[in-house]
Length: 290
Image (tube, rainbow, N blue to C red; front, side, top):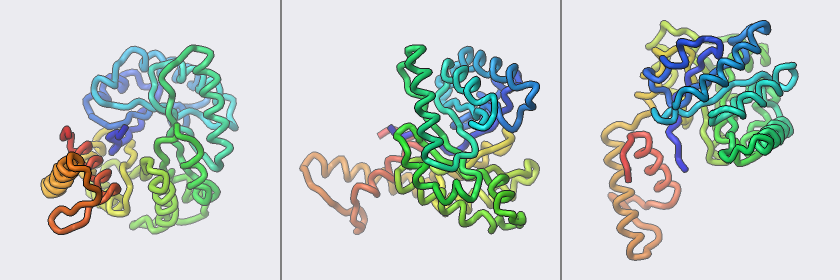
């Protein structure tokens, strides 16, 4: 089933007010953070608060998917995070610093064990963050590790540190990593998310970067402040011409299905399965039912 995933807003898991306020900002995904945003002394309290709030608020009613960024395997908090959050009304686990397929499969095995122990019937999905040179080079094996992996993202800040690169104005140091993550995601037909834009006051810069990564082929971008969400959503929402073209394709497809005809043309251009799927995704983003 296609999902609208344009924006993913990070929210600290220890900020009670934001659990309710986030609904007003309309991100497609809200990622409650138990990792970088939380100090070691606050991990336990943030975990418990996040679990309780996920069970209290019905974010799905507002078409918001819920995710939690847990702590990595190499910390003492990993399994405690996983056990608590799987035992909540969460949709997705955001797994940080993923470098190999083995790590993905380990996390999924742990999730499955917890799901079985609590009789959870709705599978928890996985959103893998790639934040190192090794992870980028293994992007395809990470993306294709399991059907629970629905998205991968480039963690730009840690990636640049790992490269020993220097941050530039046009972010050219991210281009290889972006393309690797994007190609891996598209190869297995999952969502590709770009890294956050760090300057929350530079909305013009955010707009320019978001337009660029959309042109590359990314399906969404992460945000660290609510004021970034409307810009990201607007850029990834189709314009009138794109909607009209997509409607023409789907209308023609539905007509040709009735007469059991295969490949067909719209406005002189051949239409096949990938083009139909792209049109369906575009209309989903535009919130037009077909």
